[in-house]
Amino acid sequence: MNALLASPAVLAVLPWVLLVVGGFLLWWGGDKLVQHAVLLARSFRVPKHVVGAVVLGFGTSVPELLVCLTASLTDDPGVVIGNVVGSNIANVGFILGVAAVMAPVVVEPKILRLDLPAAAFAAIALAIFLLPAGGDLGRVAGSALLAGFAIYMAVSLWAARVDRRKTRKESVPERSPARDVTWVVAGLVVVALGAIVFVYGATGAAAQLGVPSEVIGLTAVAIGTSLPEFVTTVQAARQGHPELAIGNVAGSNVFNLLLVLGTTSVVHPIPVSPEMAIDVLVMVGFSILAFPIFGRMVRISKWHGRLLLVLFAGYYIWLFTQGRTLA
Image 1: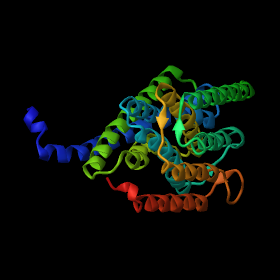
Image 2: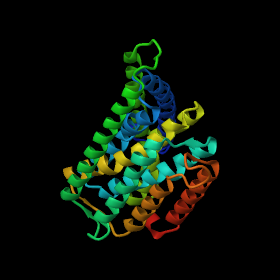
Image 3: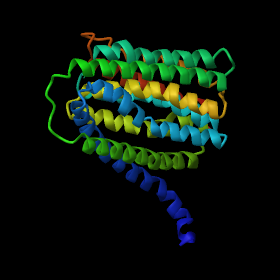
Image 4: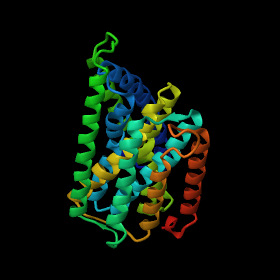
């Protein structure tokens, strides 16, 4: 049996099997997650964009946290920084772009005042920590990122509490919140499991092609760990809840930069190659482009989505024409 599993034919096919299985788990878990997150928001009178930024933002960032901690402890820092930077670029350029092309994404005022600025400031803070210091992300910088995350969570929970007081007199559907909580947790678990399976398939295929770790982090691992955000965002747009989409993207980017990188660098300092400087600056640019720039300033239009997709495709074309893609 062991000899069969270790045969070249099985090893060649296994990454593709993992991609299919992981994709199915992601899609099914994302569908259930969005359905019951909306119902949970109604039960607790919490705005959907808050659920998107805090609950879905944290849940869909779990794969990034697991991958980064594992890569850091196994002394593969290229995957760590590449995963976070690449995921945040993909979240805005690809995921938010697709969601906006599917349907204009409504941006709640609180997201414009809190979540999107927090994501942009976190990206700028990371650039400040990395670029002048020669690329080392140590424990002091990690502690500062975690402190920023604590402030973001405190403000988010305070804002949610204020909104809940304002809607206290509104009627809510008669259903058990425990059932929705169970489905949300189950959806997050299935989505995280699907992302891990998908990443194993993607990294296995990339390793066979001789792609270095930083490029694997920026591409295969970043896209793989961003699949929970992608599936959740697409399902939210498909089911008519665009406010969940922008909240999920903004919240996930904040969690990736402040919680994931902060925790990982505190556990084990992360050396970053000088070549990552351009990618960090690209991430800052996409974080700024996440703000509405076309039409009314309360939504991200289809034209905006097309622009994000074109810029994202251009970045990947540039990335794969560099010598960094060669082993």
